Length: 103
Image 1 (cartoon, helix red, strand yellow):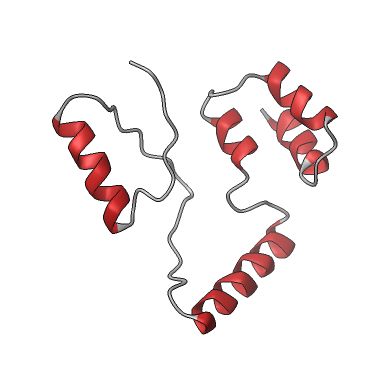
Image 2 (image 1 turned 180 degrees about the horizontal axis):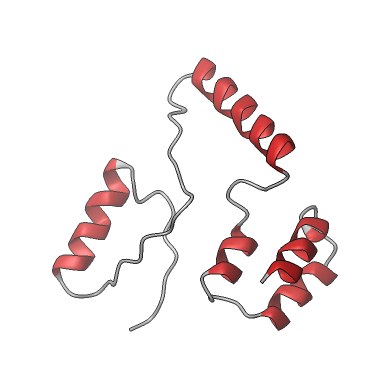
């Protein structure tokens, strides 16, 4: 069975889509830890969520929802691919170098 990484599965459409796939035996669900939901349905809520995320990232020294980190942590990509991504010198490269050393 193929592996797929689905975001938005906690919302109404995503959760119904995932449930249908499970019922038809087309999807194996794997729970990812360290993930939480922030309501951003209003302008004020979006600003509050943005401020919250920035505060956590600065205090903890971690990225929230860094897809490369998640993919590496759950073996969707290996260290060779992560090194290739780091070499592209994107905004997460320095952070990803730390992740590579930790594992």
